[in-house]
Image 1 (tube, rainbow, N blue to C red):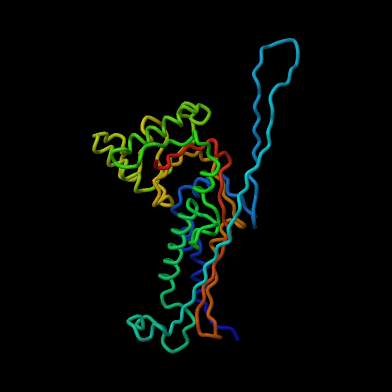
Image 2: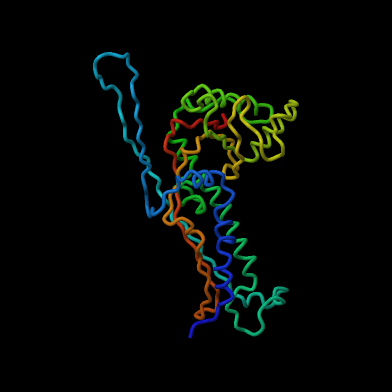
Length: 312
């Protein structure tokens, strides 16, 4: 006869959207863009290509003849998914001698987590934070298991972006913040194909710490109109219509990336797969086990259309 975990099952089914989906993959501006643009490829178990078609017509003078001139080029970039998982276990008997005993079920049949909602909620929030970081900082050669599941945008973009697309020579500091961001903005605006007179979907991604430094510089220089209506929104690269996005995944890096929305791509096996987890009681060792797994990867279609600032 099986063990009774009806209360746990009901909790999982009724709150999967809230506890799992809303927490596990939230707080990542890049992922929001990928999903919003329909650029999240599904059914990917190992790798999938971004198929790119680029047609360049040649304008000619009119004449009484047909002279085809131009080309259509097919290229591909690959999104390789990582396969992360989380395994956890608890022995409820460890709570008997602490204040936690007050909330434990009566008797000795501990087949459910005493602090179910607290533990699952905190677990998902922690995984979400790790995922936000991996989307940018992932590196399959990293010693850090949290970051070694798939390559993130920093590694992928830096490997393909042309050197001419990177503003350099100015170390990041409050005194230099406007110089660096204006220098980067000048590079972007000079590319009429990318900036298109302000008609674009470009966003400038930077860490919250960098945004704070830039905001402080604006305030020091009495440029209050550039700060925005509140402390977390409304900033643009100076002199442009490119909004600044504070992304915690870039924490620890003095990097800025200016990327068009449709240039960002992701891949997973089954969308919202991250909603599902297993939580069960094992009579073999009297422990409760937790398991969740998913597949995910990112890439960009056109590194040549991305502009960056990478410190000095």
